[in-house]
Length: 265
Image 1 (cartoon, helix red, strand yellow):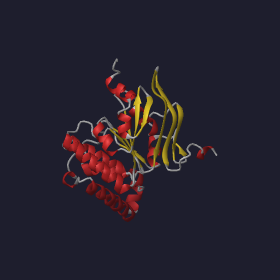
Image 2: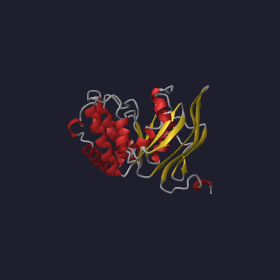
Image 3: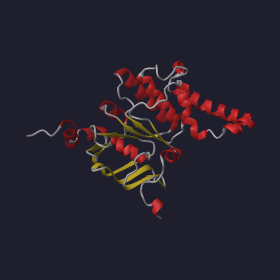
Image 4: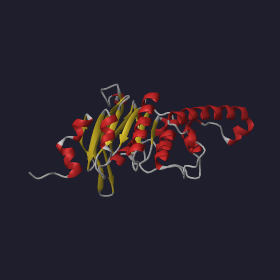
């Protein structure tokens, strides 16, 4: 019974219950609970050092919570390693661009298909027709994503030389190549100018619609999160201080105080 009792809402995709995490004597996440519903875009916001990336790293298995539970559907993730969590249908991008330099845009996106590549070197040599069929299928999927994110013109360029806005788009493409049902975007618009931000917003919304994704979005740009998120969760000093509709959340006095400091009356 325990495996189905973690949430009463059957539309809840990810349920984080009372998560806490320490790094030495620093408690970076304190009793944080978050429910994410199927098909929604949930914004996770807060000032620098508020615990956003710690929360994401807990969900994706890089630094699991030392207290609390994480459920993805009816599967508890607490003791899963990152690659096992990826196999459940969870993909992420990173705050700092984490592409493989010296490789092309196309090859970086193809790396997102690693869970679908079953042929070993031996089987590829002995059963080349099977390996070739697998490669064609994976290339076809990648071509669909390249088309969706409009990366055709840079497909053969090294990721080292394309602009930051394109690199962020390649990271999104690589995550989509894993065919996730749940996507975590960690500051996908960091360092972008206004035009690049507008492009990225459009591509996120296109991917959300085309792939039926549930998305957890960490972002500092409030104009972005209020425009595309269904709900916001606000963290400060590792504690959840507000959850609700975007405009309601960002106008809450505790949230305002967390960002600009409490104004003495």
